[in-house]
Length: 383
Ligand SMILES: [Zn+2]
Image 1 (cartoon, rainbow, N blue to C red):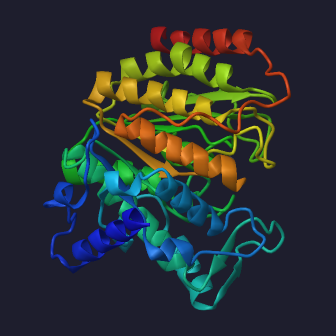
Image 2 (cartoon, rainbow, N blue to C red; image 1 turned 45 degrees about the vertical axis):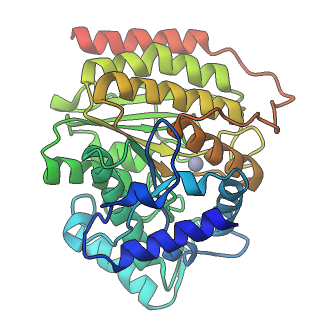
């Protein structure tokens, strides 16, 4: 159990320091013997956003924590100081009215955001937790950009990819990834950031907030048609941003082969043209075949192989600058194994064998759909 205790001690030591990023001397806090310096951010407030019986609950973090502990990964990671986003930072993606609405709902003890839909909840701590998730995503991304760490993974809750300018939905309150991308631009003068979203649901909030922004490429692989019913391939970006929105929609029973093939044939070439200076990944694991919230057939091994490809693209295009934030994944065992495996990939360590294995269902071959997507995006570049 010493790894987790060391990590918490390191976090407390950082909290006591005056530095904003708080990473000075961090490498001495971990007994790192891995090729890559991988950061992690986790804050006790992320556990305070919780609802018994809801799929997006705090037990998800507990399961991840235990698996990282079991594999001895905590002591290999560099703790990054969490912090709350300022209102100014939240305003880069959300309206003042919406921010005030979330604050007021939390102040009144929380409850369901929209009682008619019932999907997104708040507790009295959710506003503070959501601000902490956004601010921590910013700090992690800045630490990666500044090369204090090679890459990082924010174990952030509540998640963000469905959050719109004026509306919470799909368990999401504030869009951490979009705000982190804007922070790289505003605080470091970065010109191009790519967000890759492999959560099984379309990242409609991320698309909506970046659809006319040529400086952020939003890429999503997802089940479609499926909730939230957005994410068709025809959404390629608007005006000067044409070509910077990349939807990779697949019907049920898409699995490892499809995700890996669409990365190679569509996403990697799009990234090569766009030349991001940092890659942010909304890492959702609900495409796993055991997850009940969707019908894709990804495996733990598939998530590791996919991240290895993303990491390779980051090394080729932006000196390895890569930052993950936690998305979906609602079956605790596959979630914990996938997250731990992805940490191993980030660290450059061999991954543990996938003990959960493959689905008994047969994966559908989506090669034709991938060829169509490829043609469509080539047309965008020629037009
Ligand atoms: Zn999802």
